[in-house]
Image (cartoon, rainbow, N blue to C red; front, top):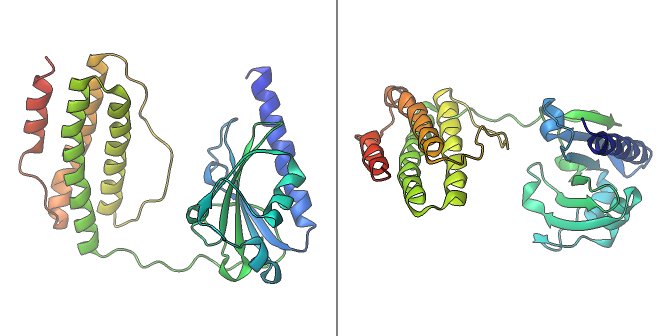
Length: 266
């Protein structure tokens, strides 16, 4: 690892330690944990900090206030918290990103260029997420609310929807190659990959969770681009019999049409 990367990693560790120690000693905060890649043990040297902080109920009305749903700003009260750890260069709030409930503030610190996603959660709505990396807790947090598994019918319907959407996007992506629109081509590869992931989960009777992980790379040659699209089609095609067995419905012969379109590239 280069010296700059090592320095960045160390700065992130120091920042996290500073945040943990400071919040732990502040009576306004009940608990804090990291979610995302750190919680899964998949963090890289450049990974951001997805920080969830439980706010004591008597302070939550002020600290978790939402005078706007999204915007490049924060409240004075939240800003006071964030600036304890450095000067923000960029601030952006999208409270819908806090799936537990509360506020979401993206803070990019000027001196270190480290991003912390601050999620403040009212104590009344808080539960310990799984997976999570607990930083501190002054109270026993409840387990996540029980979520009924999807029914077989729901899984069949969702799998069918994903299969149909996959082949529509695969066909559209051939057009992107014909037009030479490689940015959109790679974007749709990620969509296709998501469709496969969603289909696999439905076949297992599971719900998927947000993930940025992807196998998609930058494919520069026409041969690589076609081969990658075909490889994704192979994966989805292999799942179709299972979708039918589950009770789902699928297009009649989608692969043959994709191949006809691919032939236009020759």
